[in-house]
Image 1 (cartoon, rainbow, N blue to C red):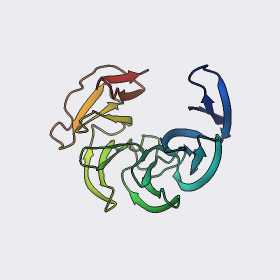
Image 2 (tube, rainbow, N blue to C red):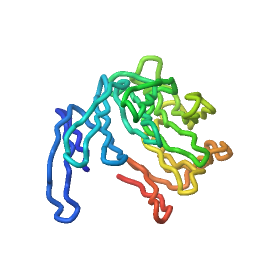
Image 3 (cartoon, rainbow, N blue to C red):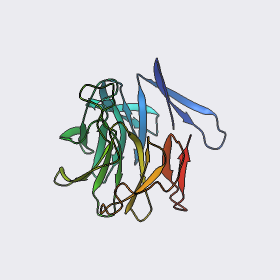
Image 4 (cartoon, helix red, strand yellow):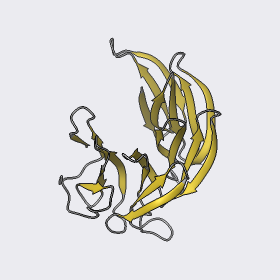
Length: 227
């Protein structure tokens, strides 16, 4: 499932892994990220008012949709809900939406930092949200990026941490296999490691360089960076 976003719209391409041919394409206004549970895929979409689409992976058709905040970016699926980071897109937002998987409706929306964009789950079952902060071009900006720790049961903020200085936005985070170290790329340069107890807050970069994205290989625990 390949999410392709362009300035005039975008597509979700379903590619056969054996033949590497395109089986189907679905058009969306501004598709962003996708995740899966059971026989369904869930896709965030929208540069303004956002939508999460439910897509049947059997028929490759949209089966349902639900409205969320502005500019939804990444999403995280737990046992019974989908958590969506509403970044604001071309406007502003500072919320995350909790979608009930049973009825596919938003049951809770909570405030975090400016421009939330990515999420990971730690070993304690808490959700961590990266917030890139306001840029110098935003009203009341710039502000520093932040990490928020959320209890998904009580839908409340457990902790929040400021990462670096104002206008040093972060766009993607990843977590190790033990789920106790979060990696993030800082716009100031480099990949940083953050222990979930906060003990390594704003330590030196563990990988130097300028990157676009970051992931962790689940089979090796290696950190992968993207340019």
